[in-house]
Image 1: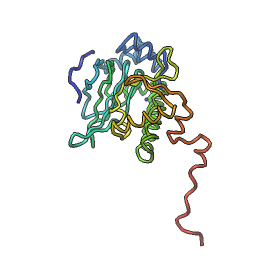
Image 2 (image 1 turned 90 degrees about the horizontal axis):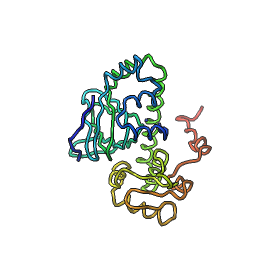
Image 3 (image 1 turned 90 degrees about the vertical axis):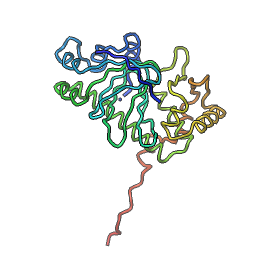
Image 4 (image 1 turned 60 degrees about the vertical axis):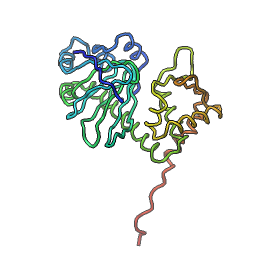
Length: 269
């Protein structure tokens, strides 16, 4: 089933071949099955999962309506979206950005309401999460893929919690750019260049900074020779090692010894 939404809005890195295939065949349910889970489109499992699928196409600024009472599983075939959590008095927080090939969950309404918004023309396939898990339970490969994607999303959430709670504005922005460099392909002939589909305001709302602070930190990184900018969306990363230093990340070996064992609550008698 396909539908076009018109309401305006106010999980692991996929392979490049998957994104290229998605661009050539937007909204393809068969792509989702074969490239993501290794399921042949004509199989019984493909038929059962297909009964649950809803294909959606949105443009920049449009939102996807999901079930407020149950979790929705989303496969982003093409494009880019942001997932936002809405609170009272019009407040919101961008929880995550997603790109072609990503799988993610939209929670039901609880303490907050979550909304998926297009950052550009995007194609998505939606499934009721509980029913999808039930029908896919017989396939270890599908469940393992979902577990791996969920684990990747959890790691990103924990990294983001550290960034928001303990890091400076410069460290937050540097870490954001590093993360985007791992998830976005460079345009042809532009090594080290990432094309960001989100605005600087979106970046700020994702990492807890104002748009003015984001712009100022980009300028500082540019003046230090670590990055360069081209227009409003292209970031050229000249030195990933220095960018990692600016992000306040520890080296892998340092991470093992950086946290000292806690002192005992009571001295031994």
